[in-house]
Each structure stands twice: as structure tokens, then as C-alpha cells.
Length: 267
Image (cartoon, rainbow, N blue to C red):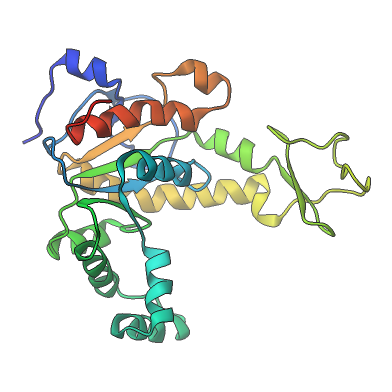
């Protein structure tokens, strides 16, 4: 059963956890404070989940830096196994060249091998599982995930940020209207030539990616929520940072003491 932490402790942790909506969306209704089933432990396997462009990569780097997590990106692991010509990599490559998905069981076997050889008992899984079915296979294979960390960023904020990126195609110079804008709107600083926007950065394309993420992630989040493992961070406890368009900093300001508490460390 989920372990309920006294309100004072929750206030100290400044954690905001909510049940993710059954469908995609960025609303804040239904937020509650919670702790989940797993107790504090020095060893920890966590899964980090977040929308494209939501800052998950930056937050993962900070967790690795501050808590010495072994970062396990299944994309990187898969490519490394294929390059090394391992038995698992060779089998995975057959599926890749055939244009089919690498079976979940095969990826889980790679993850098991990597976790077993990690130099630390703190593991951060990034990029897998992506679906509830994959999470079930992971659990059945005996990988003891204790926490699912969901990074929650409003969709409109991600669309605004990503769709503000523009490119000077001949040189590759990039601009972002929220922090690195060109001197003249729509023009390259050095040549005065027109800037263009990649198809992937157009608002409708970004929105489509986010909708796809929401549809895939909702069952995964439900899987971990039903087991008392899901915690979602949106940075709302630090409105001064959110107002400065520093949501990643706001989220990590809540996430860092939460992880420290779980590891029995001082925040």
C-alpha cells in the first residue's frame, strides 16, 4: 500500500504529485500531494518520462551530476550493442534492417545486462519503457523500478518554445525568439538573408508530436500510478522561476530534494 507521509514532510519536500489524465492535456486540475509505495532506499532504479521538448534531457543530466545515477538510454544502448556485434545487438539489427520494431523482450534483456554491470545501484532509465506493455515486461523480467518521474510541462509552452526556432539554411545558424532572437525579425544577423523554419518546428508539427506522446504515455503513467510509483513534477512550487521561462529549473528545484530524501541524503 502507498505510504502516506505527514503533511509537514510533504511541505518540506515541496513535491507536487498528481494523477496524470487518462488522455493528453496540460491542465492542472486534480493535483494532490503524495509519496507512493516505495520507501526510502540508497539503491534506486527510476524511470523518467516527459514530452518532447519538455526538458527531460536537461533534468536527467542534473540527476546524474548530483546523485551519480547510471544513465541508461535504450537508444544509446541499442546502437552500442549493434556496433559491438554482441549476440543481442546482432539479433536487434535483424529487426532494424527489416524495418520492424525490436521486440520488447530483447530490449529488456539488454537493459538487464546493463543494469547488472552498472558501477552504482542508482539507475535512471530514459527512453524505455515507453508503453504500459513494455513496463509490464520490464517488471516480469525482475528489474525493480521504484519510481516513475513524470515531467509535466504545458503543451502550449512547448509549442511556443519549439516553434520559435528558426534557421539560416546556408550557414546552419539557428535562432530562438525566446532567448536568442535575430536582430531583425526573420533575417540572418550576418547576411541579412531570410530565415526558414524546419517542418518539425512548425507549430502544427510540434502539437502533433505532443498529442502522440500524450496518447502513448497515458497508459504507461497509469501503469505506474496503479502501483503507487508515479510522481509528476511541474515546477508550480516555484512560480518565480516559471514566470522567467525557467520551468526546467523550477521542476528540478522540487525534484532534487525529493530524490535526496529517497536516497537518505541531505537535500
